[in-house]
Image 1: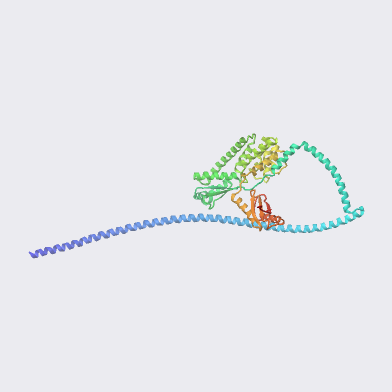
Image 2: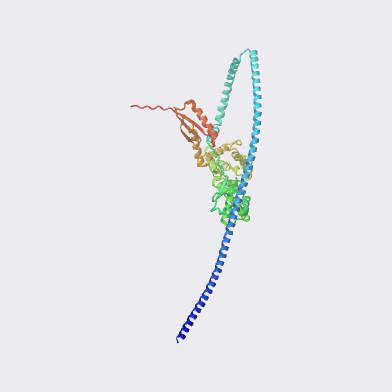
Length: 511
């Protein structure tokens, strides 16, 4: 019995050990299977991540290559501009050398001629001396006695002639007093005109962001070349943030390019065919607006019977400025001033207003002309059947044609008044203030100067000197020195008057 129990226990123990071993074997197999599956999934994930990293690398590489290509294009454009500037500078240097050689040759010829003239002058003086001695011997009078007798005889004749001339002038003055008085008044007004010169030749087109610049340039620059060819302007796309510069001397072309760029950027489609279509459409719109502006101007001023081509030219003035002053606004203002002045002088106000409106039509020609704008404007007016007095007033308002009627000086004076009034023509404020400071600093640098004042918009410089440091004989030299230094070191319109003031003050007190 005991043996049987022991045998059963041993069998159970042996069976449990075998079962445990079998369990361990099953668990080990599943573990190896799970480990293999995990390794496969890890390899798949690893390959996916490697592909994603490789794709991102390729994308970054393409973007960098594109950016490098754009930078290379900009560098190439900058190099081209530098080469062009270098060629231009070389040409200018060669031209300067030729001019210098020519001036040297001219100077040598002038020196030779001067020496010849000097010798000739000495010979003439000797001949005159000999002739004078001969005349004194023949006449029996000295040179001083002959001179005094001749002067007395000439005085008597001059008195008689002068009296007759005075009588004729008085009679003529009584007949033409009114006309001459008007001329004197007009000439007096004319002398107060002043001018400054700032001419616009560029337009800055603002954009929302710099990404638009690449679209405007296009692939290999085809879009910007197409736009420049269609509008006839030069477009400068540089590193200036959110801005594109449109450069051209013709303001109508700049306006067409500006409007075309605005429509292209708003529409979003920018390619050569679209550019040509938009530019053609904008040109028609601008031309229609020019004609409408000319008609409206003529109606506002009450001017009738203008030739359609003259109406179009008047409308083009809207896009032109002269010394910073809008040309159409200047023409309207001149026309109104001409009408007022003509009415005051008893002339025809309608003709004066017509001449005032048309006096600058030569500044907006359809074709380039070598003639001055006043002469060219007179020829245009004559071509479009304007009356001779109107044509003369247009051509003579800058003294480039002889004035034949009183209408011409009226237009000339009103043109000067419109351009010279305060605020009509602009000057950059910073440059203006700098010029005033430079004037005062130049004068203050001289010893003995106590105070300096630049007045009359920089046209006069008043210098106050100490009476104990500079005497009256030195102030004229000081004024000349300051004037020469201003001429050499500064750039300014017109002329600058330098007034040096020296005063002596004596102060006493009564107690």
